[in-house]
Image (cartoon, rainbow, N blue to C red; front, side, top):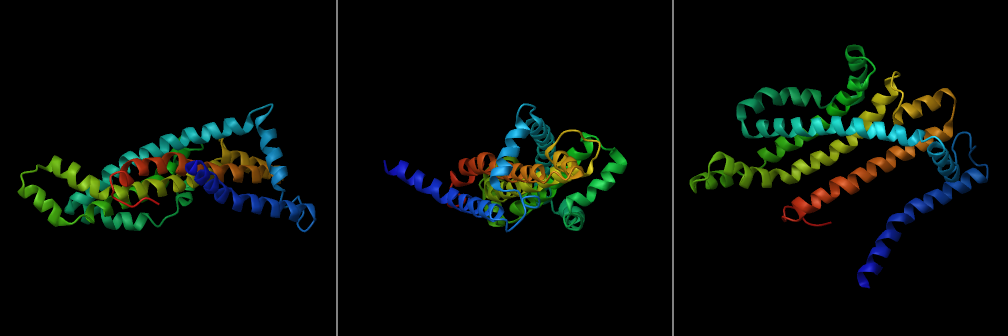
Length: 263
């Protein structure tokens, strides 16, 4: 009973800010303080979301294509980013060679790469997937590298003195010690990849489906409600990916193993 009550309290605390803001915005629009043509009310946005899903699933098709591109781009970024970060963390020569390049490129916004990708790769899915990859790669490789390099050398030396080979040292020392930083990089990369996806879909005019493409198409018709509906989908999508995917991974790894404290 106490657990149910506690869950209800946490749910209420979570929903209270959103409900309060929605009521406030509804009143602002209904009272004419701000024109509905500039700021649709939450009720209008919900109605538009319903219209975009029935009878033609425009929103669902766009969301499906966006998520499909995200899976490919983010998965590629995670695979290559973690591998590169590990190499830069354990090998001093590789670190000294590529660290300046990483420091130089990490400051470039992902959207800034999109025009170059459009010129070289065209307006197809390849451009969007590569943009997502770039959005995921840099935070993952940077956090993985720093996580590996932050491990105390005494732990590595002690393991080797006790007879551990390189593979054992990696899985028993480097990986557990850097996992907190790797998970942090993966969580950051989700947000960066999602923003890169939407930005690339907006700029790639040849793309027919996608949340970013839907918002950009609504701009041509001054369809403010569809634009805000797309923004809501983007915000909720990013939030759900973090809470439903990355947060459980963190709880089953770094929190379960006691690497960080539970929040």
